[in-house]
Each structure stands twice: as structure tokens, then as C-alpha cells.
Length: 162
Ligand SMILES: Cc1cc2nc3c(=O)[nH]c(=O)nc-3n(C[C@H](O)[C@H](O)[C@H](O)COP(=O)(O)O)c2cc1C
Image (cartoon, rainbow, N blue to C red; front, side):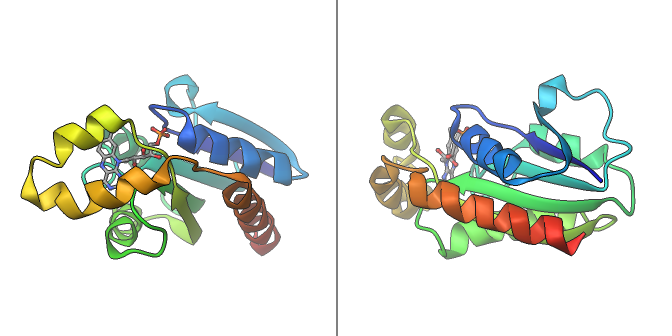
């Protein structure tokens, strides 16, 4: 069995989750940023992680997903500033799943990730973003050890499903 842990991460939060997933898997495996990936063929399972941006999937992450072959087994993970279990990050994951219509989605995981305060200051000027921006200020210590442990549990669950 061969597993790829692929991630897009701008400030390192999603990368931390990718590394926790990678550590928890005990098969042949690779962990790479999407910018270093030349081929997505030959994997029994691909974990793919991205940061939620503007309540959705960042364009670079969506482009990467478009390169994955139909029928590929995939498990998503994402980090976001707003509260875990909230509606907005859930929407982003659902969007990722809808982009992946041709893929076999095995599951998804999400947790909070700290947000650059300058980004919050800029984004909360728009009333559309005000609610999540307030929440996002509370994400400063994430991902924390609990998030990393939850990611490891998720990784083992996905691996045993394949
Ligand atoms: C331009 C931009 C837009 C963002 N939009 C959202 C958002 O809509 N909802 C949210 O919960 N977090 C949002 N965030 C916060 C990121 O999702 C969060 O900080 C994430 O953990 C960053 O992951 P990274 O370090 O892997 O890039 C945004 C961050 C940036 C920079």
C-alpha cells in the first residue's frame, strides 16, 4: 500500500496537520506540498489538505484536485480560523467534496489554525467576514496537541478503510 499526504499551506498550519497524518501511517508513504508534486498516480490513498480561504477552497488547491484521476481514493483535511464544527468551514469542505465528484471521498477532517492578525484586521472590514473574523482571533494556539492527536486518529481510520 502506498499513501500520499499532499497539502497546500501558506503559513504552516495545514502542513502541521499533514505531518501528524504522515507520522500516524505505517505504510509506504510520502508527504509533500502540492508545489513539489509532479505526479499523483500510483497511490492507494491520497490525503489532501488545504486552508479554508474566503469560506472556500483556495484556487491552487482546487487546481491540484483537478489533476487527480477519476476513481482515486481521497481523504480531505483542512484548517480554518473559525470554530470547529461551525457552518462555514463545513461549507468549504463540502465544496471540496463537490469539486471531487469524480473521486472516491473516504472522509474529511478539519481543525482550527491560527490566523495572521493583519489578515483578520483587513478581512473584518467587510461585513460578510465580520463574524468569522471575530471567531478567528480565538484560534491563536491552534493547531494544538489535541488537534494533532485527532488528525492522527483520522489518519489511522482512513488507512484502515482502504
Ligand atoms: C486570505 C485568507 C482568507 C481566509 N479565510 C478564512 C475563512 O473564510 N474562514 C476561516 O475560518 N479561516 C479563514 N482564513 C484562515 C485560515 O484558514 C487559517 O489561518 C489556516 O489555518 C491557514 O492555514 P495555513 O497556515 O496552512 O495556510 C483565511 C486566511 C487567509 C490568509
